[in-house]
Image 1 (tube, rainbow, N blue to C red):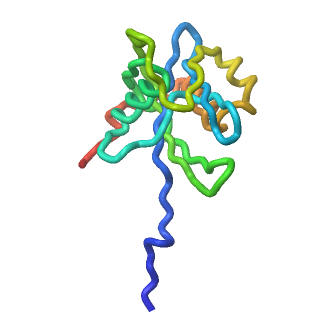
Image 2: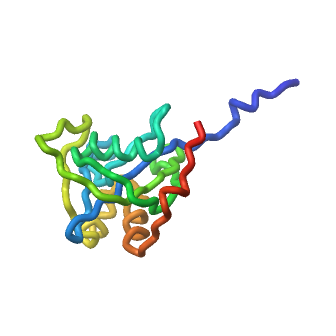
Image 3: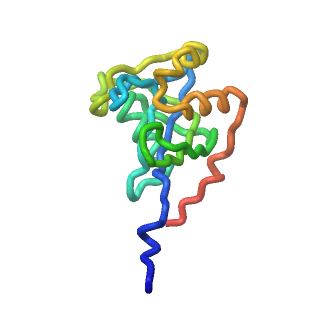
Length: 155
């Protein structure tokens, strides 16, 4: 009997997140989710044909309007969804961003863009999209930074 191994193959969902700090505050988006309004870094899924760097720049622009340039990789995080059987592999990048030149058209579900101090974010853990959000910020604040040359796209 031949067993279909593909049916059993587990694959995490690849996501990217942008850590953007300015004057001691972090750019955060407030978004509608099935669990209510949540705070997150500008983040989203890697799309077919994109590099990780293209994906994080696109997601930052679509969710916040800011033009993000990654400068380093803060970390790679595996986390299970709080309300399902999905596992996410988040590539969190830190870098610089330029404000939008005109009022941006944000992704559906994004209700606000905020600049928040780390302490203000940490005080709202129940409102975070995932515990990974705060872990990424803590790692960034602790100086964890890998060079972008760590990433190789061989397609």
